[in-house]
Image 1 (cartoon, rainbow, N blue to C red):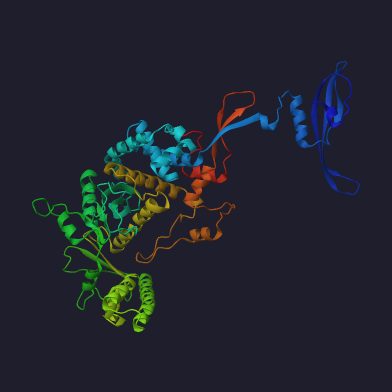
Image 2 (image 1 turned 45 degrees about the vertical axis):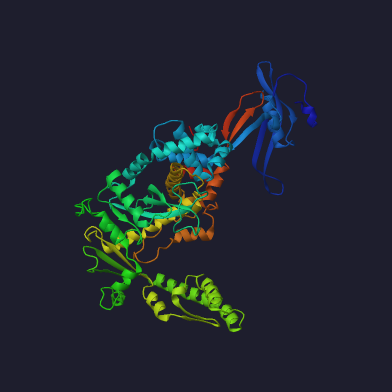
Amino acid sequence: MRAQRYGLVMAQGSGKVHVVRVSKTGYVDKQGRRRDYSSAYLRRTYRDGGKVKNETVANISALPDHVIDLIDAGLKGQQLVPAGDAVTITGSLPHGHVAAVHAMAARLGLPALLGPAGPQRDLALALIISRVVRPGSKLSTLTWWADTTLGADLGTGGASTDDIYAAMDWLAGQQDSIETQLAARHLAPAANPGRQALFDLSSSWMEGRRCPLSARGYSRDGKKGRLQIEYGLLTDPDGRPVAVRVFPGNTGDPTAFTQIAEVVRTKFGLAEMVMVGDRGMITSARIAALNQLDDGTPRPDPYRWITALRAPAIRKLMAEDGPLQLSLFDQQDLAEITSEDFPGERLIACRNPVLAADRARTREELLAATEKLLAPLIARVRAGKLAGAGPIGLEAGKVISRYKTAKHFAVAITDDALDVTRRQDRIDAEAALDGFYVLRTPVPAAELDAAAVVTAYKNLKYVERDFRHIKADDLDLRPVFHYLEGRVKAHVLICMLACYLTWHLRRAWAPLTFTDQEPPAPDNPVAPARRSAAAQAKASAQHDPAGQPYRSFRGLLEHLATLTRNQVRFAGTRATVPALAESTSIQREAFDLISAPIPLTMT
């Protein structure tokens, strides 16, 4: 590079030429203003006799800084090439999201938990990680692996659909071992001194009709008339998934509870566990059956549980001479009572005034909405536009069943008249139960006081949260497309293990998301749960003190995906080397929160 190209005139002579930069700070000009100056010169070093001297060859201060840098580098012997030719990115794949989930899986010991090392374990692990990062069908997941670093790093990039199904079959065979290890981690007395486990049942609809587990039953997804499966989730008191069981779609809650209770006692070896389940699950008949041996004699080590009474039983307790009287709640919202109908059991009655007001408001809104829909129908009958008891009754039935309020209306139909009035006595009877619930348990008060019983039962909200994550928010279990019974169970198991990963990731990444990091412990266990002031501030500000945006869990994974791994080829070479893109502060913090460095590869 010649200086003449920049309009410079170089002095004649020999000697090495180099760039010298001179800075002057604090210079005061004639007007008394302080100025800072920076100059750059080309100088030649030579010997005159025995002395080393310097000669200024050119003043290059007027050149742009980047040009001066290029001159300096060229004179130092560096090979300069155009920026576009120096480095070539031959490939780039999203990396941060799968690397973070894999790092959490490794931290939790999930690979060893699945079983011995091998190609099938790698495929099973890849399916679980993929379910967290990008839930989808097995076929779409197979093609997606090539679009991230997951396929290359776990060696699953060349897998076929047959390989995936074989891995699912292998994983299904590992289920008992996996769940036994998880139970030892999270349900054993050392980790769970309260010896409590939560269990609840949900359903998801099926595509196709060939699966033997498919049946019509009560749909918790609102998919009436569709074939479905039922599956029960067992968790620790914090909602951490431990085990899952899949049942035919017409299985009732009590039957599912019986099976999981036997699993906890026999396979997990946890005989003193307190099982917490909803009111429709742990019934008196089911309790009696569980606490009898095969020969009909009482079991010496009876099962322990916490559940709630149904409305008819509560109504009986509230009868005129019953033990549950409204006066008990004049000064408190929790009272422990006894009843001859429940020998050997404790009954903890609770009244939540907030819930009572909400139910009263909802009931009135539904009644008013039904009456509004009925008004045009009554007008048609009066105008003679609709006649006949049959047609009138058919139309009235459609309207009155829309909001499930038929029990609160008295309907009189003739060939030319329709009269609908409220059954105020039934409305008042239902309103008397608003906000009331009664818990029942055989666990003695010395081991679990009344407040602790209420807290344990209300912890079922964590299982409901897990179901939301499994079915909708994160893991998209539904609908189920498999038709082999073993594959259906393997699919649900993959979703349960992905939920286990998600549970830990959501907790670890709470500082970066809208998750409430420290929800306040309620002074009153009956009172509704509330978000902390810090969580409310997050939702209001949308940004942390440093100006970084808070994200949803899914949004954080999407941001991590922008951290790519690139294949770089330098000028003059044929080989490529992997290099990560520059990470953002949020990406670095996300890995710090799971105690893992940002890895170049996952193996």
